[in-house]
Image (cartoon, rainbow, N blue to C red; front, side, top):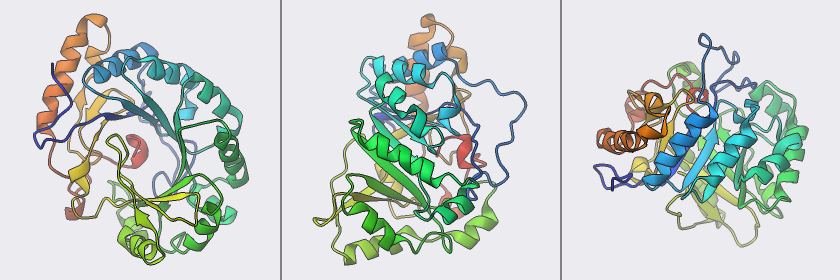
Length: 326
């Protein structure tokens, strides 16, 4: 049977599925002017998602992460979570959210079958959070995080995009935060996309600078699970929390790639910064197309490149991260 292995011997047990391109935040590094709909987009429906996940699971996918835009803007999100959780072969159902509905909805998501949660928190300073996201909702988001920590998730993690001059001096505050909390913060190196070139030049800071600070402070690198995301995770005996670093500009970053992406409109993306998408939607309409769908997914992996072109300033067809879920 076909499987999710590419020409470089990499396997892909991890799927990132975008549920919508829409987002209600205006993060300075992604959608500073807010979400602008392109026509009247039609995103994948419940039956299409069911067909899609069944095919990927049949090929060896074991973990699915629901992304956006902002996935919680989908009113049918609990049904989508339940579909993912009930798909034979799927062991982990994760989601990345800006936290806008976390406080009111996270219990419902957990009951539907969500097993892991990532929440974007780009600063521990409420004023900086407001400046970066365009929303004065820091306290509300963090209250939702506190609720999530008590619901028995396999993991609750926070994501922060590293920004020079905006939040790159906050490591001491994060260390205080992590000392007694069983939570992980993942610092993500700012990536250049199709429409943020000037912003990237002003605010990009290399993640290896932070890595050196952690190593000098006694933090040690831990082994990476087969279906884990791209973060290098560090632990310290004096802290309950963990720190992850996502460094897309680091040497050999793509050698450990284990994830594929499907856009909210049903295109398979072999790389976040790839040059093309492969339409799967025509094969998501009927059970009769199940084998053909699996075949299309498996054969397209032969086109996956060894790595991205970010070092050459090539961000592919990704205009901004909300368009594909990061």
